[in-house]
Length: 506
Ligand code: 3NM
Image (cartoon, rainbow, N blue to C red):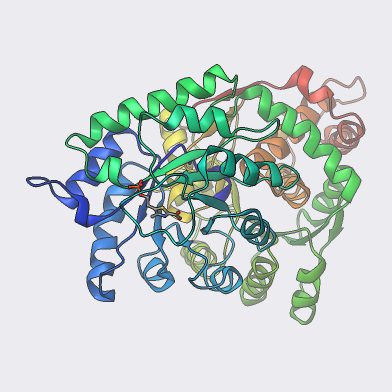
C-alpha cells in the first residue's frame, strides 16, 4: 500500500488489556474492521518479541481480509518481520531517519507529536503522517505533557499549513466529542484527516456498531464543511493537467533501460512531454545517475543485463526515485517469468505498467503473451481484480493498457476509455506509455496513482488527436503524428479536459 493513499478517518490503536469480558482481542479488531475502521495500529507495550510477531501475523490476516493497512507501534523489528504496512513511532522511540533507512519509502511512518516544534521536525524528517496528542486526558496512557485541547491541535495544524501532511488526533476521543474536535481544530487551509482511538473501540461492547456510527459521523462532518471524500474524475483530470505542466517546468531526467526495438521512440516520447531521456545501460554509472534521476524505466523487451537493471532499480529506490517496470512479454517464456519474479523480489517497484496479456498473467488471471504482444481480452470485472490484486500484493501502482486502460493503487481503480485503434499497429506504443508514465511520476511524486492515470491519459488523447490529422493515413504517419501531439498537449495540457473519458470504478 502506497503511503500516499491511506484513509486515516477512523484509526484503531489496539490495547489487549481493555477487551471486555466474554470478548476476544482478535474478535474486537475484526468487528471494528467490519464497522469500517480504516487503519489499524498494533500497540502492545508488554509483549515479548516472539508472541508479538505471532499476534501481528494474526492481526495482519484480518487487516488484509478487509484491505486496511496495518501499522506496528514502535517495534520496527516486528513491522519488518511481518511485512506490515508501516510503523508508528513516539518521540522517545527509534529516530525517524533511522526508521526510514530501515523501512524504505514504501512503508508508512507515523510520528507522535505534542507541539509545533515536534511537528516541524517530523515533517522535515519525512514522516508520512502525524499523531497529534493527547487532545484530552485519557486513562489509557500516562501522559507526560499537558493535553493540548482543541485549540492546541489547531495551533499545530496552523503551523503546518505551508507543508501539510496527513494528521490524526489521539487521546480521550469518543464518538461524542469527535465533531467538536474536527470542526474546532480546523484552520483556513487544514483539517484533521482522522481520529486515532484506543478505549472507545477496544472496550466497546459492540465495536462494529460503534465504528459504523462513528464513521458516519466523521463523513457527515466532512460533508458539512464541503470536504470531498474521494478523488473523482475531475480531480484526476485536473491533476493530469497540472502534472503535465510540472514535467515541462522541471524537465526531470528519465533513465530508461529499455529494449532496442523501441529505444528511439521512448526517448522521443520523453522529450515530447518535456522530460530529459537518458538510455544508459552501463553498470558503471548506475549509481551516479540515480543521484540525479527523476525516474527509472525498466523495460523487459529485449532482456540483456538483468543484474544491471536490478542494481539501477535499487540505487534509484535508495534515492527515492520512482521505478517503473514494463514487464514486456512476461508470460511468453519461463525466462521472462523468472526475471519478472526477480524484479518483484529484488526491486522496490513504484509502478508496473503492462498490457492486458502481461498484467493478467502476472495476476494469475488468465493473460497470455504471444512473443511480446498481448493476446486475448477480458471482461471488466476480471481486469479490475487483476490490477487491484497485483497492486495490493506488490504495494505499488499497476496500470494495464488495452482498449480500456485500468489503473489501481490496490484500493481505487480508474478506467480510461481514450485511445485510438492505430495504437497497437505501431511497435512500442505500450512502451511509450510506460515512458510517459515515468515522466509523469518523476515530476509528480505526491500521487503516483494519479501520475500514472495522467501519463496514460496523455498518450491516449495524443493518439486520438494524431489519428484525426488529415495527413495520417496509416501506422507510419500515425507514429510521427503521435510524437507531435504529445508535444502539443505538453504545451497546452488543458486540452486534456475536453477529451478525457475516465471512470472511477472503486
Ligand atoms: N498516545 P484513548 S494518547 C496511545 O498522546 C496514545 O500520543 C497518545 O487512548 C499520545 O483513545 C494515547 O483510549 C491513548 O484515549 C489514547
